[in-house]
Image (cartoon, rainbow, N blue to C red; front, side, top):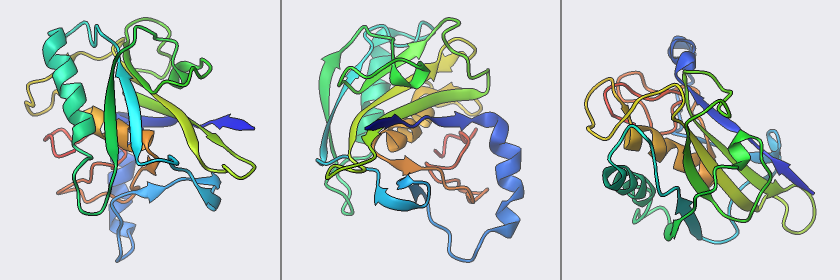
Length: 208
């Protein structure tokens, strides 16, 4: 049996998240992991450390396509080459499909990234990206992700690749969504002065 899991990144949660920082425990982790049964069961993760992905060839209509695709690829590369991980993302080219799991469609066995530029986007203005993995909930493959799509809010947001403060910057948001793609969840007690990549909201100073 497969279950879709939608993970929403929302700027509207920023004030709430920061208000909890004062109550955070002494030991704070930069992310949380997802389990098949809320806080129990198997860890939700890919069965292999090599994960393929496909980018929509048009990227965001706000941007120069080449720059947008470059920043998108750099967002995946940001997770590679670290001593604590053998994770490797494989750029598998482009896909024109926008019927993503993260906007309510079924799986097609490709991990696709696309900007949704019309009313198919139903999450509101302040949700910048949504990632929706499919994973097994029973059997010997319990917890294994088999597909995860990323939808970016091109309908109610204007995107940038400049890295300027207070912009909706592709890499500042997409690196976070890629974290969801391979199983990480939000850190609900982010450091307000140096927020982690998996903090619930996008940092306006490009620290994500």
